[in-house]
Length: 543
Image (cartoon, rainbow, N blue to C red; front, side):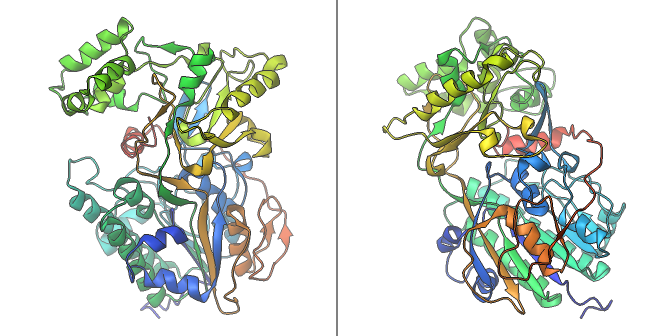
């Protein structure tokens, strides 16, 4: 028991981004004994993720229990016609676990869960995670300053990410972030003595995107495991739920560029006029802001190389064509040592969205959007031809083969086969599911439809779930889905499940039944945070 008398939450949820059995099997023996103990002592099994299986959409599905068609978030970006913004909690149009608990008179502590900024009003405390700014609003107001005074430095992001630090320094930064999460969480458990508590770790995903080999994953997972152990020792929960939003594994296939195929078909119209669509020009705008110092750029304006590339683009000599020639001469690597990738990106051919028929606007969405009249500001596809056009585009992707002769996609699905709810119209019209998720997608335009993947690892469909505690039989969990997490967590607390949830209580705890909660009400607020955009671009999530 703590000095304040706090004991431990009735239910503790530990979220570990990208955790799976396969990931655990790759760690050195003894790296994560606490995680392994939870899995061994509880009911556990694989957890099927949703489409798309990415952080900004999957975690809201976890904490609301509904599909993206009901909560409204499909990726890191929200779109308004051809404009965009980074998503935040006001884009999640369904009530969270902690809001439903609050409605039943229970208190909660939530730390580092993605897409929770700005936080709602509820009984308890919340420090937001991914997509929030570095100094976010917390609940209650003033909480972050209090936490920093009590436990020391607390940051959302790795300060080593963009300082040219070494690999070792960057991993040190990830370990520091993990420790900060644990210290802040335990401080709030002591302060609030909550019924429900939710702590999420993001670096478990980031480390595999950046440094999947060597000791980096072991170091990050050992740090996470230590914080879980310290938390459970200090504040032992009655029930612990371990959950991940998806898995992760080696990317053994290709980078697939749907916009290149659509360009070759005549669906995508391209432009090199320098007016890149607003969601694809993160790197270019960083250059214009003087944020990139490579290749003699200055605060006074673009460098000579940037101006040269822009001039080349103006006469149709795009970076793709430059790259094709350089690859044939085997000089592409040498040039990229001198000319940064950001500068090359500044001269790229890009999608002219208002004048195109269909396009991939954001690779994280995992799908193709048609430029539909009445829905998009300058729609080119009539409502009467929508289904025929969509079916024709679906046929093109279903028949697409990799250079190895294998199908590129295991499924090409109309959105109504995947999503349901009031926000289906915000989804891509066609979902492109890479074959066994061995391939990645890119929204960029290149000469070729297929290329080498830019990251060594990519997301997989199966994550993991475990429920452990008194009265929970340590049996295998079968056929569990991401949407089942929220109703199961509520069941461990004896809280009625919302009748709007798509998931079901896993048969390892007693089902408390359901009830109708008031629908979500609230206005969307903009994010418009350049630092958040840049961090997402640095991690490869924005192109």
